[in-house]
Image (tube, rainbow, N blue to C red; front, top):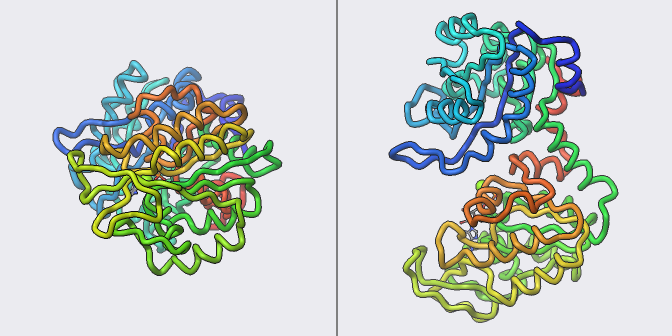
Length: 401
Ligand code: ADP
Ligand code: MG
């Protein structure tokens, strides 16, 4: 896989370079304001290096899940403004993805300038399963530039036009962010320092069963919190009240518990409430005493202590998924406690997942205390599952037209 430095060594001054970045940031609805600019900041090293080398930089990115047509609610306008502030340069936004306005604005770029294309998912072809449809969009994107840099780690698990097909059409390299993410994931998968402890949370157990299966043989401990712990607790025979429960996964969880022995560690207490609300009256109970009508919305303090003990001895830690509904103040303490314990790890600590990374920042924790905060949730989980990711395969020359 060629690197950004390889491209820079060829000389990029005056050349148009297409960069696929991951600028998929969370936004408030109205006014549309960016609530966490972490992904924009993570894209800066590659963009800045290209600008410094005199490249004419064209950035492609997606935002949210528009339905394959322009939709002002998903415009990248706020992202262009924030990117411009962070780069200290004007970043114009093309009115289309790879149409007349994109071509005109790309042609008008000077050395070191940056142009942002409108949300690539405004074109239905971006995510199409039809190779020819994606290929047509990829042709138009490729025509804008003469080299391609993939820096969108959060999208490398997608076989999308701007991630996969365009790389088949232009000389391609991995950007700085993709290189850093890969470096860290390689350290997690090849001979990690032990004990190796993984903490999983978040909402859906079905999203994470594949990664649990893949990691179980490799880890010393797998700590499970968040909404997904209730399916495991149910598998253990606990009543879980109205907590999140995926009934069709209970048998799988029971089998995993049997296989894992003491390697899977479940919560011992939970914070419950009758409703999903910041004003709800909460009670903290042992896991086998969740009241009928209540939901478990966070792990309790004894769980934080127990998880903290496991993390305290670890040398390698991967954490994905909040321990509770951290968006609401009464259910933040579990995520905060685990985040603090992960930050204190003496060794490599990696946070993966959009919501987990956002939680670290929203709870005001020091990002520098972590070895790495991954920008890619799905991408890092699929990598850890051992799957081949299309966006990486194509960079490594294993793509097929
Ligand atoms: P990530 O993006 O880090 O991979 P997920 O998307 O899997 O994480 O899950 C994040 C969501 O899980 C958060 O919005 C959080 O509110 C929710 N969540 C965590 N614990 C619970 C719970 N006990 N009940 C319901 N939802 C939960
Ligand atoms: Mg998420």
